[in-house]
Length: 158
Image 1: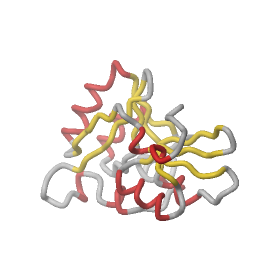
Image 2 (image 1 turned 90 degrees about the vertical axis):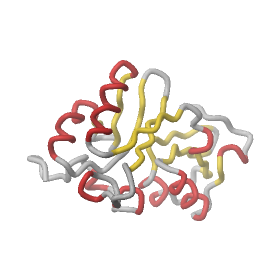
Image 3 (image 1 turned 45 degrees about the vertical axis):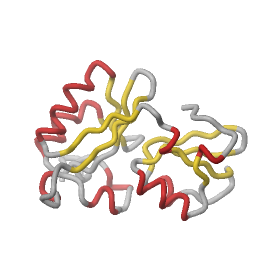
Image 4 (image 1 turned 120 degrees about the horizontal axis):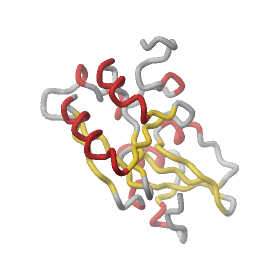
């Protein structure tokens, strides 16, 4: 636990799920590094990862947004962050095409379970959009009633 009483990475609000539960140096399956998707959104990269190793989290803490429960890395710090993640047995994966990781629901629909596994969310034209943390999270959101963005008339617009 960190000094403020939250788990390292500040994911206290979010319940563990399949993607996050296996991430971190102590939780690796032994098969290889755990992938972490870093989504390029203009002048920064967004990602979520449960980092339970204090030294690694301390190194990345300057990029952690506790309000949004995600890391926000400026483009000029991308290589440094990727190196630190790699050192901690994560596999950073740069994602520049956000479309396949986006889902949409109508704004009045229940969304808490989808939000838990998202990296970003926004609303537009009576709909709520989510950038999901992984392909598995996209599939789960679809099972919960969301529609893949590429199956709609909408485009990514963070």
